[in-house]
Image (cartoon, rainbow, N blue to C red; front, top):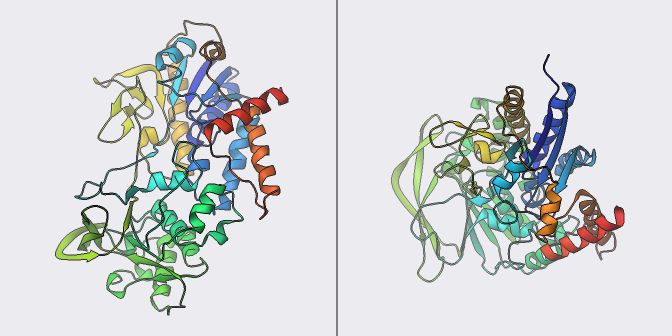
Length: 458
């Protein structure tokens, strides 16, 4: 009879992928009569990853996901260790020395490239950087240049829609959210009047969700502008699923809208493929080639070119994973090289005890539900390998916190996060305009509040 498993596992990344992986592993091992000791490492002082720093502040429905993640970490079966970066504060090999297995769940936080002339001109930005700014990420500048009137957003996914909505929305309508004070001040001073969103494909191939799209038409004092020439294949009756049918109805409903005289406009353009960002010293416009559908969601160029004057460009064409120091990385795909979550070396052989889950495993596609099933696949392989004796045996028995203390790393804990969470909520209660919370932005301030609070709670 096999002995019950007793595993020590390190998970790198405290976003949904990492938290789900820890919870699924704990349940799987405990259900089999074993024990799992899990440490969850995060480079930021606070947990939740892109849920905290990648979702627009005017999406309160995300709170349900945060509450679920909170419950998993608050259960005490996974130890949160924040403000620790693997490759700087700790090496991957040092984790292997102390844990039976390491799961990489570092996500994808960089913008995918858009390889066209002029994309690096001043005034051209990655959407991920702008999202990080308006979400109060501690490692981006506190100010953002919103000093231009006409702005282009290139992309047809939810991130493009979030960026466009935040750019078009009046700051007064964001006051009730958890938006950081410096971001609110920046948006209040915004000069933006017209936001243009460009998609390479047509309305029938958008990558939005109905809720995101419907919200767009409900933004106060913002007119939605669409163009009849883009709607030759946008018949809701021909939509292959109900979700697309709903979105096509919404888009078609906007075609007959008259201008309300709003002070801001959000223009949706389809069948526009960017070929060049125009300008000499800074962005002055974008050159597009009109496209046409050829079936199966694919398009081709028509040879018709148009130039549209804008003074800023945001590319929202996807995310790209960052390499983890010491782990094999696929530069083309932007993921840790793996097969179903087992990290593999150049020859395709599994690296003992090393796994991946979430966007760093499969690329930046799919929603939260995909992250759960993704983690289940990875954990199933980890448990199988553990039962087969295929993991690395830890060679060092000390607690990783001892090593961090010796290096004077100012790590944060779950108790520290609870203190920071309470601090931000109190800031919201005492704010001039009552808000659910006011995010603390500077990293050093987050760490100070967390570490002081951790001592108080312990």
